[in-house]
Image: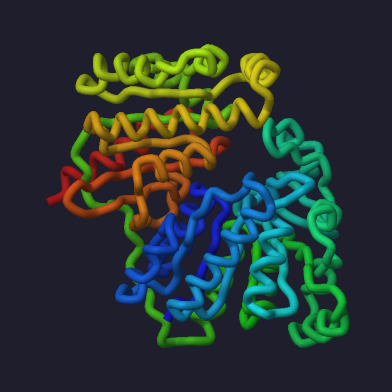
Length: 427
């Protein structure tokens, strides 16, 4: 039985939650197309992630994606459903967290769900409905300057309420520490409130929340809550399978590439470290917008270097360059063009023989995976690579390490590539 079917609103987020479940001994493959779900029914999977690039699409389109995903998961006998979004609740005033949750709630014909993006393991917590990154309120953190989804309000009840006509309530820490039945009774009395932001100041709050919502058809949040849901169902179902966490996946002989689209400081440092010793093509989006042959020029450059060692292609930019680009192309125009270029480049580098990719940025990762045509991957257990190591097997295998832009040390590319190389040394 598929205990948990997860809809993730971007690829790196989906990879992380799958890898965290793998760390718990839960077999959890990831698919990027609902058409691949049928192949899961004959496996030992207890969970599955459907990763879709839906965080920033039009709300109506996001609703349709949510409905089709839920129905596909229902068709393979999924027991519980989870909507996974960013741990910093990344969204706009239009959505898509509210619209997607509404669509899933209605499709499942259920009356309530919870929203808990907290990830205490990484100091992301919620108290009295307010999110904190470390000791800093979300609205005062680095997220206030996000170029696409600036998060300027720390009150998640208010943020979610702006995206939905449904009433949004709060399951506070003071409520969570009561007996489960007492909390359930309180929630059941609030029949006109289908959406609840849940506090989580620490892992113990998440454990209580998982026990509270284990039998709910739908829960939502970031990466941490599924861990505690898995522990809860294993506690209540002793026949639940536990698999050995995987650190090394199958080999993918071929050229090595670093694709970067994130503008996070961590990615910029990783690129600078890489460029000290390896060829790097920095995409100028303003120039690319006026040059229909720009991608071909990147590929001509790549042909000169790709057989000699790893190369990088990046649209990442610091604040000054980002401001110049957005002033010329607009925020949406710059992001869309960057995705388009990096997706085309990845596809053509694959044709040149690249089989090991490190990709920085959630949106970029989704674009790369879709452009190369990846449908289903095996995921390694979560570790220092941030849960992004995955592999598609078959006659032409390919491996990836996908990372959120803000994660990883300066040597992340080299650590990731070393892991994929290790697979080729294991017989």
